[in-house]
Picture 1 (spheres, rainbow, N blue to C red):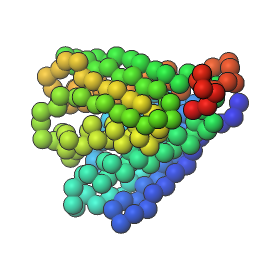
Picture 2 (cartoon, rainbow, N blue to C red; picture 1 turned 180 degrees about the vertical axis):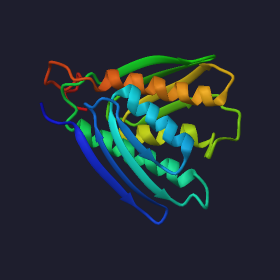
Picture 3 (cartoon, one colour; picture 1 turned 90 degrees about the vertical axis):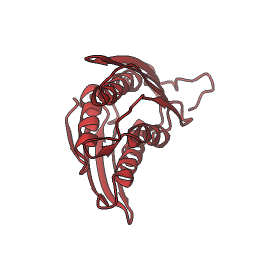
Length: 195
């Protein structure tokens, strides 16, 4: 089997990011963004999608968290896109629900090559730790665009914003695990013959 791995980096005046990942890993991760709650969400994504991720970021957090959050999602999504290669012999579609106490989230993904995201998390706090709540759906949208996927993520119910955000990332992880799973076929999973 061809390894589905990728290494990506991004160097700008705002961030310096390195990502290494293996889509056929065991969920091991080393995430260091400088934003504790973002680390927490990406660690949950790696663990439950069973993707090995090493991600380090040196960002301009003296300004705010936006550039770091956005750029980490862009580079991670780019690495996932690269690791998928020709996009053959994999499930393509995935969907999952994930609860976290009172919260329940749903994620549906299609690695179609057509980037689009609809995200509704219902967050009400200004921030969770050092991560602005407005940046949490932005991370999901940036991730979807850079990994060239159609993504729908909704929090169906919940009261605690930490629980809602974490449930959303766990649902995404489970949906991704289904979508990236290898199949016995070597065909492109599309009636068009290409993605």
